[in-house]
Amino acid sequence: MPRVLPQDRAAGPGRPKDLAKRDAILAAARALFFSRGVEGVGIEEIARRANVSKMTVYGHFRDKAAILSAIVAAEAARMTSVLDEMPGEPRNLEQRLVAVGTALMTFLTSPELLAFERLLMSEAARRPDLASAMLEAGPRFGHRKLAEQLAAATTRGDLAIRHPVVAAEQLTSLWKGFLYLECQLGVRPSPTAEEIHRHVTEGVAMFLRSYRPSALP
Image (cartoon, rainbow, N blue to C red):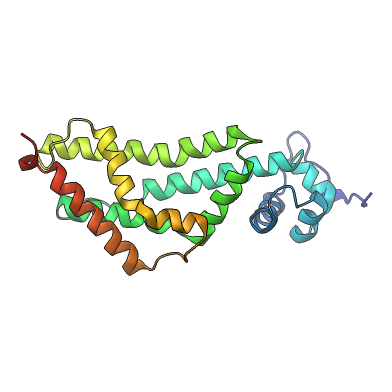
């Protein structure tokens, strides 16, 4: 058993834990989990990579499942932050939708997020609660925000949408298309900024042709 240093002891009541060490543990676990999966990584290896003792890891997290939960929570917060910071209102609706779709697809097709999603899928059978938490914080949150924007555009008369929730799903599907599936499966590299912009612009054009006020009786 490794020697427990005074600074490695779990924090007691009234004494905050060393957040820098916690962050180092999460960063180490994240990198190892991404490369080899959760089952292929031990606590000892996480401790070595984080440059802390094994007892320090246990002082912050009871087991690997708790570490994975913390990583998922951090990723969910990052995704929510990205969605919250989507581009503000540009000159017209088409520009707005292209800007939002480009921001979303740039985030979703980043190598780091794709690696995280693969990890989460591999753990979903054992930890469906984690998958549900990520789904709620990420895709469902973004879907609700987009539906609200489409409903507002309908109120302004820019669009003619009867069911904004359904329309938001349709638009997101146009943004993702086969491109996103290929990235998820790792059969193609992440698209360039130019490829994302072209892909999103074409999807928005198709969406607007269907939901412009003149398109519905």
